[in-house]
Image (tube, rainbow, N blue to C red; front, side):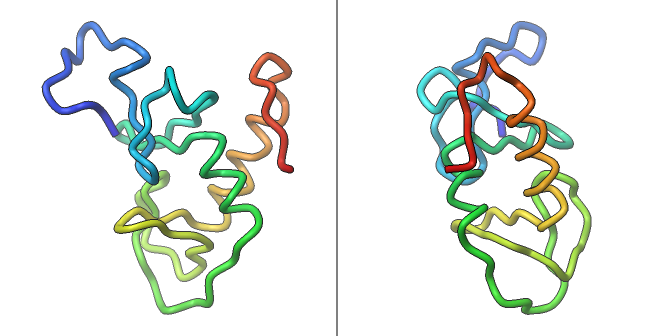
Length: 103
């Protein structure tokens, strides 16, 4: 998500907010961005990897925007499907500069 009122032509790290915890990129560390500016920070992703919610029917994933039956983690109104959770973990896991780990 983007900070309300930010300039889309001059985005700064503080303008990117985690859809799950609301922290900006400068405070929350590594981020993975999905469609239409949706973001998840490394801390929320780590939490999502250790919890799987029971299926409750299709719900829209914030990162891929698809209605998916496999919502793996949610916080507030934000949802993360299992596919995006694993894909985001692979992306951050390959980025040695991020310092992110699954544990």
